[in-house]
Length: 113
Length: 111
Image 1 (cartoon, rainbow over the protein chains, first blue to last red):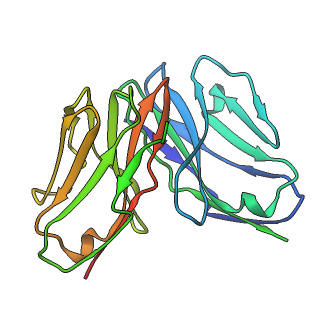
Image 2 (cartoon, rainbow over the protein chains, first blue to last red):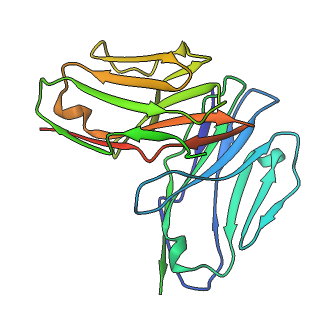
């Protein structure tokens, strides 16, 4: 069974600061995927990224970057030069071969203008 | 593609009434999931289908909940009878090309 921990319940930063959201997961599988989703105040779940367990390269997409470290079972998410529109709840979710996502409890990020 | 479509977006009903939530998946996606989101329990998987066949319904809270997928383009989640503790946002999601997309959710309020 999978377990995912997002230890940061809430984070507030001032606009333009960088912020990193932590995610630690537990799985017995050697093959799995890791996802991040954003849930803005409007409530929808927005897919951000999917990484597989064989690809430990960091990924950058605009102001977003992800650091996957298999040795520490972490898949952290960094927003560079944060903006007010980044305010949302962010979920980390591992997925094993059965296609089921197991969501973390989420981190509520507030960007202060 | 229009993405995952859910209806209704909001539903307010009284305890004891039957509630039916609907989902139209993205065409070609062969997995369909129903999740529920509450403050207390977060996002939890209720049931999922593969090629219209229910694979795992271990997350369905009790017999009052049932889900069907009569064809590849439609699924329903039914609660009968509804109770106030069923109040939540219900998300439908589908998987394609490894990515998993969600509909906008149905906010259910049971009075």
